[in-house]
Length: 289
Length: 277
Image (cartoon, rainbow over all chains, first blue to last red; front, side, top):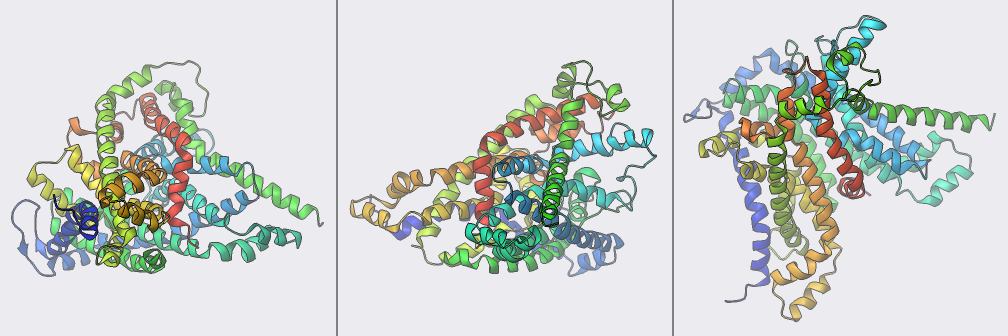
């Protein structure tokens, strides 16, 4: 057998990954572009309808509810878990021996499946019969399940996802903070700086690139969020927690209007894309690395 | 005053840490607390300690959640995903790190973009193509989809390991007459091993826990994974919270143990790509 050149071999090394990614991600993504401008039920052959799908979803008030919910979700996730994680990581920096233990405990909800987390919260916390909410309602003060009320359902679902997610941010920020040179931290403490001053003038400047990356990633994931909403409320009650992702999913698999599902998918991908451009730009160093 | 301020700060920090730990583990403690209790006792007071230990809840949960079928499917699906991802990502990482191919920059940007691509952007046509091919519910097909999703992050994690291996080692192997495949198989791959373990653990846990792809593609009662089986109990077992809590325990306990043993690799993998600077 003729010996393959180094270059040919390296093309063969990249081929399986590239073929898999193109077949599963890129080609179907291009099909989604086509489907968004077609009337398609997923089975019979699609017919071109121009912008009709976009016009139809634009006239649907649920679509605008979904966009607003995604925006709210983004604002909530850019502030609450970020804030908790920054405080937690800063406090962990002052605990030399116990920090590793806290890190493991805080990560526990993150490594469990969304299915387990969602079902546990629904049944033992939010349920008006078997959950903590029901118990408090019967013994301390009457209260409704926050999932049953359209005004609070979004925040109830978000709190489950925040519970699951904040540990991840904490571990990332903690790892970034630990790269702060020890002599700078010591100098700050010797000068008598308090916790806030150490954070503001020593650790924060060091973790800024990581913080920026996390802001971008959280924005992307907020526009794509699906699991907890679909598991806990399916977008209800009265479509109050509908997200772009659940809205699209129902078009595709409940009413088989795949064209409309694809149109919504393009809208959410567009929001994600804006943040992705920032992500790729911030990762440019890793291309050259 | 000078002394009370830091002491106050330390107290506040302790209160915060205790609160954070309680919030993180409270739902899991409630599962552990109620998993041995009958339904009536859970409804009466979900915070009470169990008065008797009955394993009947576990038997009903195992049957209701179809866990006997689910555990096999979950292992097959996650196993397929780990093997395919490791095989593809390790070779691709070598090729991208060594830059022997034209367009390596373009390929790097492609995989970087694929890291954050929304699943919904390709999910719908993919599903209907799979349906046409009759491979809905096939764990190998679903495993390929999960592999494609896990590939980009895995490639970048492993690429960092290859970059840390000096080029001179490849050159020396080449001088000794090694083919590129032999260089990869006998030199690069063994040196990448810690990265391979990290990727395997992350991808295994990701695919074990995954919901959107798995619930869409693993249709049919014989194809359910452990998480899907448990999900099917939700609602139908609302009046048997003992079984619901036991089911949650069956689902959560092995993952907690797995995580506690592997947490070092897990944290290393999570922070590798995310910590900048």
